Image 1 (tube, rainbow, N blue to C red):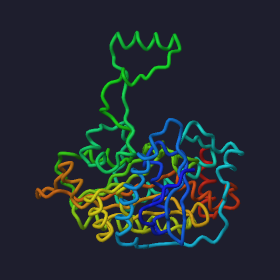
Image 2 (image 1 turned 180 degrees about the horizontal axis):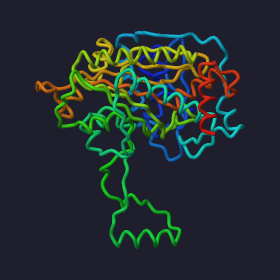
Image 3 (image 1 turned 30 degrees about the vertical axis):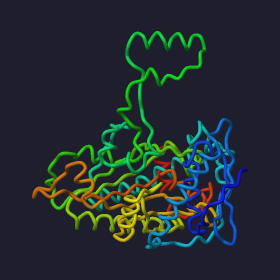
Length: 399
């Protein structure tokens, strides 16, 4: 391990946030540890991979990221708006238990298959969320394709603010030369970088589901007064670097998305009501965690930091964090308001010509299920009756 001391120590309050970013600073970093001195983060010890960039180049990137983190830490503290305390022991080796019971099986970095018990909970939680949308918000449900045009992500600003998560989809050129070259290389067993035979990156694997909805209603007049609600469920993809592990951080995961479109008062009211419905479910299902104000910037530039300040001061983003271990949580859902940003970006207008306001809720179904199992274990007899009974009823009806 090579020590890299910061120019100025960071507060321990930045520890969890910084830990989520270190591997994104440079692909040369293979492992790291925090250097804690006098109750502050004094630096990092890093292990670099073979053929890594020069240490000086990695060090400069670390210092730039730490100065960025220091600016971010100056923003207002998170405001907690809901919590339920954890009163039981966590399943510290839940993923190991799942592997032993064939309830989980790795299929590549950040790719995990799951078994019947996990699926039963996963489907029950999703159906409960979808039912709220349909019964209490008169929602419309759509099913979208997996791929999304890169131009849509660019139009909505995602490529500018979160490029580290994007995974592009491409294909081989449809021509005779490519056909012959690939056949030859495969027959000869030649190691080949086929990206040179591929087309442009016109499509992405979606990092979230809501952009499909914005694409659907782009360049349109919204005549449903005062607004309407859309829900969908689908696969989403985010590059998690070396953080990809068990079911907490997946490259390939599932989101139940809810989008609110309409006048300002309608969207704000929908977001608040849906948050309360989710809190009710957490209490009913006895899932411990908390919800707090949050912000989006990752490696924030000055304009991003201004946006971050606005997000917290105006309470535009809240994050539901659920316990998966002692003093350890994962973000399982976010509740967002966009003001007229999405309306302007996608040219969605109300009948009076004003741009629509939007909000969205995204619930990560694998994380929600994993958090429940981390708190209650794999054996249904230890689950609260509010979950055990409907899951068992659902299973019996299917068999």
